[in-house]
View 1 (cartoon, one colour):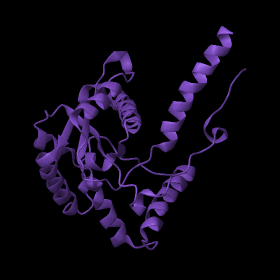
View 2 (cartoon, rainbow, N blue to C red; view 1 turned 90 degrees about the horizontal axis):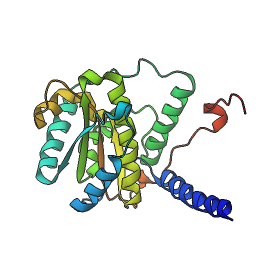
View 3 (cartoon, rainbow, N blue to C red; view 1 turned 120 degrees about the horizontal axis):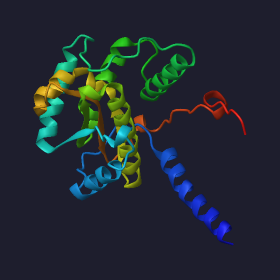
View 4 (tube, rainbow, N blue to C red; view 1 turned 120 degrees about the vertical axis):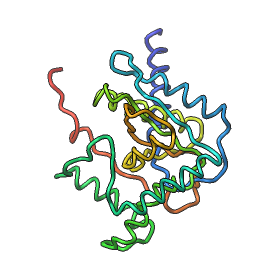
Length: 236
């Protein structure tokens, strides 16, 4: 009986996790309503439980809201609009997308463009939509995630875990999120804006708030590979 009770409890708990993961998506249109500070702090407290290499907890987070967020938005949009495609990220961009990784990237991109009615091959429209990253898609808040340079790739990997848990906790509290590597393309600007030391490495941003569920850009969902494509079982 005890065993059955435990099984039932476990099933209930995993069902909650599965539901949150299935619901979460990269939101690209937000309502302007600010999120109350206690809710933001609850997200942050939950994400702080993220596992990290040697419990180093290398993430540092800047939460930008209100008038400061608007100043940051104007700065980032202007920087990106005048960069002519150049960027100065702290971590190298993928050298190449090949095979199934290229296929998945293209599928995701075309889902976005098709939803917005952007014709395939319209590079000017692609670029205009890409700039919406720097408007934070209208989100009232932005989290900037940065780590210590000396921790290298391990610090960045730990921050990736933190980002996932931040988004999951936000989803549980009725918020929408979008992780944005694009913001880290201009890490030098971010360091200067927030007075970060030269030893800090910007991993990404997360725009968050209450999603605009009526906006068509939020109507599609990306696919996920099956286990047969991603997992190898060895032994029993």
